[in-house]
Length: 400
Image 1: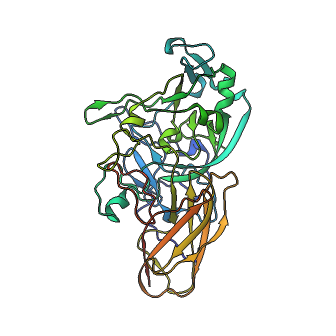
Image 2: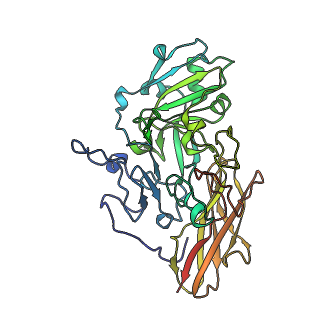
Image 3: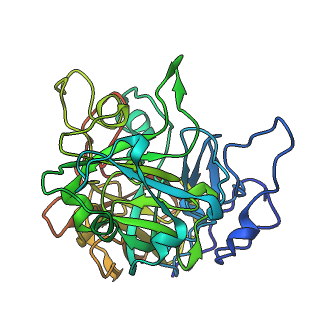
């Protein structure tokens, strides 16, 4: 636990939000908008907890409770391509079709599974990090002097949650899948994504049958609650360890195919682009290693011994070690790994004691290595859309 009081920024945007406590989903839904008014995000995003980008909202690390392992829904970042849809669980149905089913079906012949049908299958829970592919994007510019496109996230487009639902492999077993199936396309029920005058249709992205049969989940709950609308109610796909875009929210259909499927979200978006990348660079899947301090940038710390905390995570496994520097990289020391995820997909909480902080400006650095031997670099690989900023972040603080 930190021994200082975190800086609070901005004004409280909603008196309905209570600290880091988990609230019931109903208490986090905004009232139905007036005719003609369509807010992109339905849950409150007060300035003390979020940086609001309109359709997207970033969690502020300065608002994170160092004693809590899981991220409450009230605090989890939101990444939308359009507005959050409001769906009715009682009329919800998941469509499953494609030539990769045991009995080939066109979209018009799709099998439909109600929410009640899905709940009859064995229930399952898993803890995993959920992270936007562009998390850290702003550091390409502020730290590496490079121009990229997309939402200017710092480090808060991430969270660790406990998902509940049904394994996708159990759903596929219940409907029957062909041994020749190789690819599944998940499509959401949100509005079409329109950008630059182009309508790309509903958000959709394919993934391998191998991943589907491994650890993919169709989730209806988070941290013991029903999903909030902003996080995919009534049902979403979860692909643990993979880029956030792969975990399609408001899941409407699954197309199972014997050929490799494509969409703009794995050909145009969410792949590396730029002069040094080939035109056919593969879609991004497994997230890299990243770290964050539980501090605001330029936070003022007391000139006395203080325990600082942070978190590190990896899409490929657990964190094996974290090295930290309190002097801009001149010297390094190991952080204490306080708590790790049990299933290899949650993040690791760590701490370091700063025994004699001198007054003035300092840069804090944290560098993690996972159990697959992947270590954060000191410079992230440039790409024009600003994905996978995994470099060590230089975090400024003031000691006074």
